Amino acid sequence: MSVLVVGGAGYIGAHVVRLLQDAQIDVVVIDDLSSSSAERVGAAPLVELDISAPEAPDAIAEVIRQHSVDAVIHFAAKKQVGESVERPLYYYRQNIGGLLNVLDAMERENVKKMIFSSSAAVYGEPDETVVLEDARTAPINPYGETKLIGEWILADCERAWGLKWVALRYFNVSGAGWPELGDSAIMNLIPMVLDRLSRGEAPRVFGDDYDTPDGTCIRDYVHVKDLAAAHVVAIGALDGELSHHQFNVGTGTGSSVSEVINAIGEVSGLDTTPIIEQRRAGDPPKLIANADRIAAEMDFEAHLGLREIVDSAWEAWQAGPNRIEK
Ligand code: WQD
Image: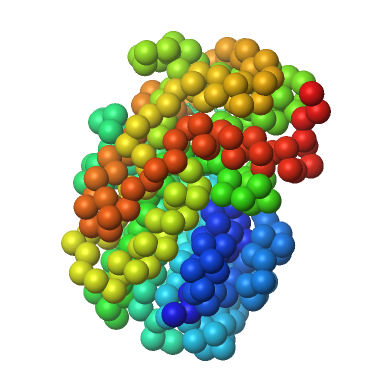
């Protein structure tokens, strides 16, 4: 089998590339390297390409032919929620335009398997704390909308030309499977806390007056190595009969912001006493995956917990440019 990983140099994509290589599966990467670097893909062939460019379908088709690709894992997308609100057209062009170009090349080259990076952002602010895949989809920003529309496009391609697909809806992905593959962006809680600590500043908690046991928001933190493994399992599952297309990927349990910050303090030995700031707009108090569907249909379960996530995120941070000297 030969797998094309689009966006394979990114944080999650590079973990999947590493696992595919470890499993002796042939892999080729397309990435525009806009938020990543070539070293992350190791020895895998890398084609540098902006998939939203007009000439991209031809270039992608060429990669598919050259590498006899049988399946595509599609990560390449912009993912900053705030930026998506400010620049919706850019998000639609990159995330939807890019997906259309990849699918166009796949249809032409008769490649009929895709794993798509979706997100818990498709649920918006769900009524339930523990979210099932059948929950109402009501994204509250263009980023989440591009993920939901992506799922609809895949369903249409299935009807039109027999595409087999799975959308994995990620919850709060964090940690590092290998120290050199840590999350280099400072966009989510753990990197944001480590970044503050690097600069000698106290971590920030955005609101401690939520209706949760310690007053801070609860999320389902899933280790990026577990998430990467889910993609490899899903590729195999496309060969069988699946009853659904959308699968949450989370642990089914939640951790609060305070618990995460305390865990960082324990692992690092640093004082992580936070400062409490205002609530951030659009933060639901609790968001946890119901992870039963992927367990039942693909026999997949995330088994790494908050401790492993924080341990590995710390190790990766200390291997990077902003290492904290104690
Ligand atoms: C987690 C919790 C913050 C930083 C976002 C996107 C989602 C998905 C994942 C992509 C919240 C709190 C954070 C800090 C804090 N994106 N926080 N202090 O908002 O659950 O999800 O990333 O694919 O679509 O919305 O993740 O890591 O930003 O925040 O108190 O310095 O940590 O308020 O409660 P979020 P997050």
